[in-house]
Length: 381
Image 1 (cartoon, rainbow, N blue to C red):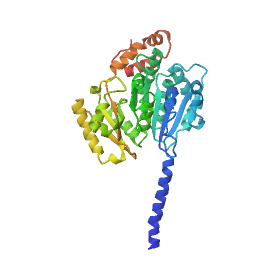
Image 2: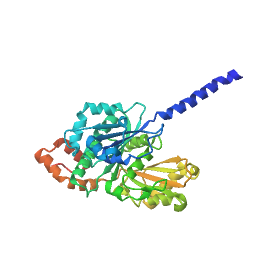
Image 3: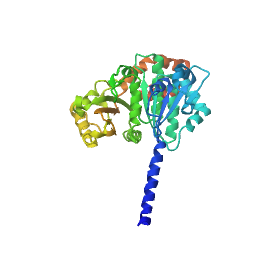
């Protein structure tokens, strides 16, 4: 009998041994691009356990100098590049990185076959980020990696230079088939006030960090969003969220869903949306109460009764082993109308339009492609 049991016992031991090894090889990676993203993820505890997602930082030398000692001392996880020119405008950085074989080899050397899901964070108003993101994302797409971009967009009250960088980078990303891209308004992030799961204040650049960590909480979320983006031909998303909400205080998931409408992270009309993806993070002990089926039913009713919209929605619960009763709800809204937003931004960057068309400030054809992508109904003169 002993010998007959030895086979299954050995197989069980092998499986347990493999299970113990696999978590050391994470299939997920976060990439921070530029100074804002670097600072946002700087103190995150998400990336430092043995089975945690990897974190890669891409930054210009001058940005690293501004960060000083706070920039950290992990060169193996940081790609730092330098230029002879000021990293102010996106197109200088984009042209430089696209042709810099050392940078491209360094980036490729940090991406491994077993890594399948990527979340990239950057502030598009920065010249470095605006120029680098299309280059990095194109390499991930060419490598058949699933990537999601969390992009901070400058408010229309910000400088025209920042808006030009953001408008151009976003148009270029969308024209090359970026995949799903979360668009967050910088001013609304700064004004956002909530609490995290520990009850600490959540606002400003901590909000993008919270979103990056949440998207990496469960393998398959990025892959699902990429597949959804392709199926519905929707690339731009934005976020409605309620974080750290006590179920005892708010009494029901429906009430927490209502809270998400109070501080949208972009000025948009949800009635024009074509797809909804809902992430609900809850304590494991509430799994029997907040099942996936229950969440889907509540979200469906809420959309129809509260917002009077009927669009496809996907709900994904994330259960964590915690003793509290805090619920996080993050609603990714995709396919909404962007004409008003981009028309306003286009007006703000009109001086660059004139410089490009009349004085050769930048490639006219590329600029026409960018404008045509973001404002398809507007004819180029």
